[in-house]
Amino acid sequence: MEYEDLSIKAKKSWFVARLITTVIVSTILIVGVWFSVYNMKFEYAVMFEKPINISVAIIILLLLVNTFIYPIIEYKQWKYIINKDKVDFIHGIYNKKRTIVPMIRIQHIVITEGFINRFF
Image (cartoon, rainbow, N blue to C red; front, side):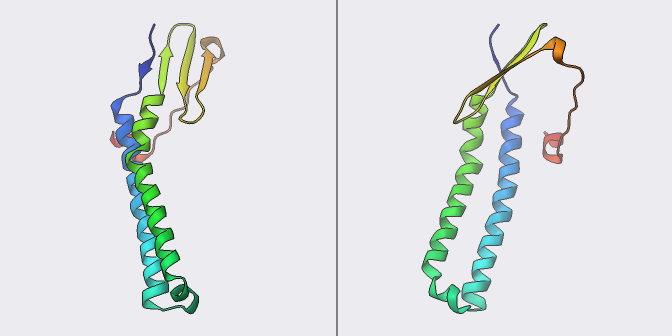
């Protein structure tokens, strides 16, 4: 038997969840910088205007990478097999981890979904 990939909907769900987080965090950062440096003109904020702007730009860039690149890489790393005697799955980006669960050890399964996963 060969390992199966997750549903393509998983990648879409990860993308949407990360996009929402990126928009919220970026908005908070930009509004915070605008208020502290440009609107209220706090003395220390104005003094460090350039490093603050560079830091915010780097954080937003990392968030964008996490939104657009990470789900693609993460999706390629998840593989699984379900057969009559075990559930075997491999996941991980930096450290690959293989988990094998014998069917005899599974007593019950609880499935929880957020609103994004329910949509997909």
